[in-house]
Image 1 (spheres, one colour):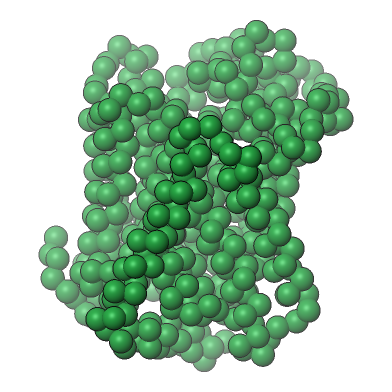
Image 2: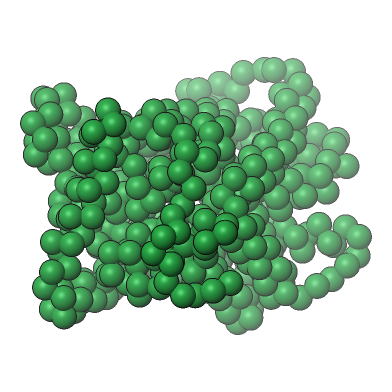
Length: 472
């Protein structure tokens, strides 16, 4: 695996179908992870309003998608939101968005790797095999690196297979729960019994983490067949599919725990407990195996998306130029993939080595990741009308859509800061700001050494946009 610069190698154009692209979005969202970890957390705050919280989050994510598709229907790049924000708000703000995006994808990968470790350990426990958690993490990281390094189509097919298997198993459990309860309507949920506006707002902050990553399909724009048609369609379809799944299963999970002495948010393994409560405890190992697959697929999807952001920034010479290398045979961003995997896998391995609990690690890393991604959603919403105005395409409804979306996105951003969260969550906004500050300092340093940097970035991204304008 050579690290030498290869100017001629490029990503495989016209390579991925709609189904393979949608696997990227769904893999990054990791619906099984939300059912196992996030829905119980939302329930802890929103209670019977959990389904409504997820409906609000679905609507908000769709609004972001409509803004983002103003770009994806006109241009495609492995730089994803980074390049789109450059088009709207310029290279300086664009770099900060990409810097935050790297944090989002990197820590999401770290979080779901910790989930992979946890459920792999559970599965091995069923056959009385015990492997150190750190070793499980290394196995997960190396296997995802290898697949991402070999071929993006292989990555997409495995992601689709594993996520489909996991969601299928969980859907069977959901149907069993409904049958066991005689398909009765839980009026306490529909009437929002004991639910307050404040609990809905707080739950919405957590529920947003279930949707982050939906936009990662845009990072495969350079490899998609008919990207200006496929990417926008993928973003909408994947968001709606997983959103409906979240709304439905949050309702089902709450029904499934009615009458139990164990609350949904107190169960150590919510899905396995749900199976046991409905006399299908034999499904617990199968559910655990499906969840392992889902977490692994999510690590892979985040790796592919994050590596392509690194690739683009490397080619723009903002970060180390070697990150812009593409493997001559595999046509994958092999240096960026290796760099991304090494960094994200070190984080949970260190935290596990320090004896922190997996659930805590998942919550901490996931929360920080959400800051990076929602920050990008807000920036893309601001960039949309600016970009359309520059190209004489702006209409009043575009401005209204952007304004409404920005206001809604401020709810989870403000809610994560005020009221002040318990330790260590109260530190995460400060850590995110510190991350942005480091990025700003680095970009200013690079501009100082290379005054032509901003012009070169604009030129490279405009060249891509012009290519698609000519093709339209």
